[in-house]
Image 1 (tube, rainbow over the protein chains, first blue to last red):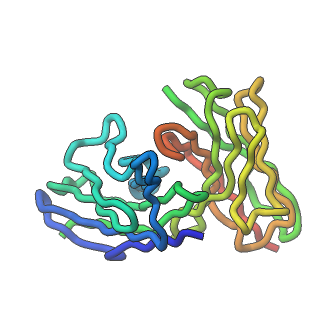
Image 2 (image 1 turned 135 degrees about the vertical axis):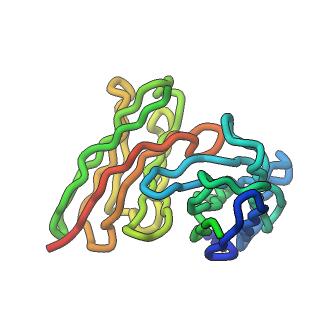
Image 3 (image 1 turned 60 degrees about the horizontal axis):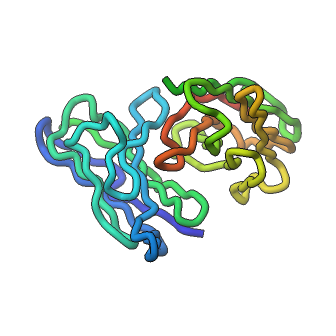
Length: 112
Length: 117
């Protein structure tokens, strides 16, 4: 099984500042022949269902603000919120879909 | 617009069964795979099961193998999760989610399952 870890568990960021969340997989999720990383990011705001933000590690889902970006390859990935807004307070999860499906434990983002 | 509406949750005793339903609209249901994902109270997301667009392929998380069965009725635009031999640790909000650009590009609002004596 592919195990996903995230760091930090939580972070507090001032409005307008950058937030960075890291995600690591226990095995590579890069499909070499397709050159695609099978890695997605989801946002879950308090009391709401999760929402897809990023897929293929760096492709933004339609309608997602461009302050959200994903990067990384192989086993190490990053979600960056370039300028934190109040509405970005949420828990963020990474997920691999290379072999079955596994979520990371989540990172809680709050306003400092 | 895509809508996924789960139903069938409730309080059930350990060892009993429950069937969840997810009614879909706003897309061509028979073209897409569907997933179930759960979230225990105050915990993270946990993938449960997936069924292919035509129902020919199914995959389960280890904790669900032999106890949970995913199925779909493309004439009714509905996906189901039959859960048998329920345990207290199965207590969670169960979401259905549509396959697409990523495994879960749209989610329902969830239905709460509580397994308690």
